[in-house]
Figure 1 (cartoon, rainbow, N blue to C red):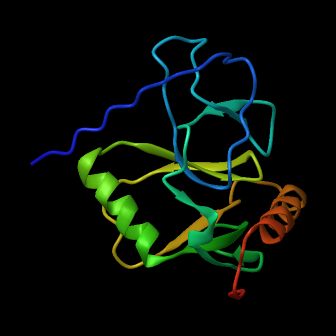
Figure 2 (cartoon, helix red, strand yellow):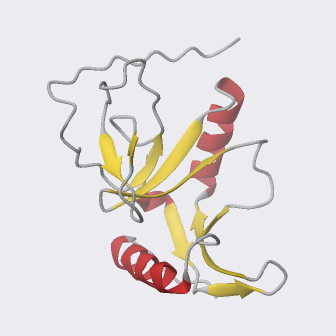
Length: 156
């Protein structure tokens, strides 16, 4: 049996940026260029993304944020965010019901990064952030996320 999801979009004004709570959202692709359910600006740059009205799950599903790390093989700095098993189960359900869906992590009404699932998540509950950012931008983003998350503990 297939799960069919229908979204009803009701917007009075779509030129105003929404106040998105922190969490993981669907990226929406409006049929009309000027019809966006909720616009959220990216943390870096001037562009924005259209997202669902409500998050798939809230930021309370984040269990930890790592320190900034360096991968000598890829020669990039990054940090990871660890999600709860409940949130991973939900993403896997969405993957099976709606393959190809795109998601975005929003922290304090700013889009941090977008992703899609290419396969079911089995062994990892982490999201890598920042491998394409300068170290200065990464530090600012890391600090913002650490302040915003209801983190119980850090992971090195």
